[in-house]
Amino acid sequence: MANPFKKVEDFEEEINDFLKRNKTFISNQGKRISDYFEMSCYNYIVKFYQNEGFKLEVKNLIAKKFKYKLSPSGYPENFSFFEIRLINIVEGQDKEVCFEIHHNLTVQSGYQHDIYLTPDISVINKDTIVVDKDHYLVENSTKKFCYVENINLQTFCEVKNFNPFPELLFNFVGLYNELKKEVLENNSQREFPHHLAPSLMISGKGNVHSERIKKSLESRYKINLLYDLFDHGLRSFSKYNSKYLKQVASLNPKMFELVTLDEIINEEDLPF
Image (cartoon, rainbow, N blue to C red; front, side):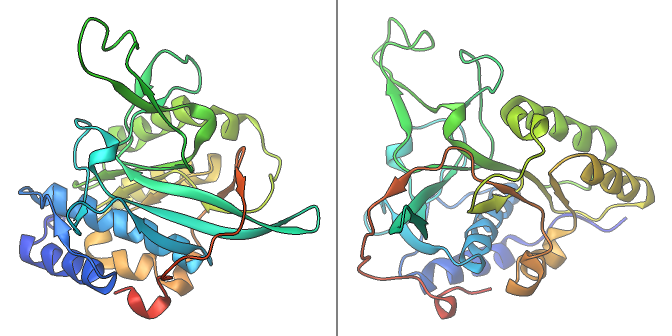
């Protein structure tokens, strides 16, 4: 079995290249190799939407630096994220559907609205983070609780710096069921635009057994189980190969008036 771990220097070069091309640079660099892998996977997700024709805009730079949110702790407003936009025609008028790509954002369960989970990467409707100072999880304190209602979650990804093994793969299906039950229960094709289907992004290579599990689970559910992203991450999310990844239609997308961005991030600005 190949070693799933990669040199920190390789990740740092890749991530700094991504942010440099987007006219910013990294802040809050992780010390663990898993942090670097998670930042790299975040960049892959951004690249996927760029390949799908979305306009990209970096939001909430901290002192002109892109600050990744590498743990569930901390308030979202203290970290950076990407906003993505796509033109859609509504009743004969051009509108934009807008989403945000966040790191470690707390999301409401799809079954019970007073319990929460924190996926590694989430794509949500624009401007839908709830700030609640009276929430039961922060009562009798000066803190606030920040989360996204399940109805505003479009998709999510989990990132694991491991070789794939059965329990890891089946645990992801449980998380998918808890967060996106409406996708499991409804097989109809919803309206444009589409998102990357909920995905488990794994650094290491699979063996014969884990490959068989992958094939079985991907045939049952609208998910992507992505192995060997250390060696094949850039290739898996290339413009050519992105089209082979499973997608899910938008759920309750929000429409906005067209906005002219000062600077659009184009294909040549991305490092992949």
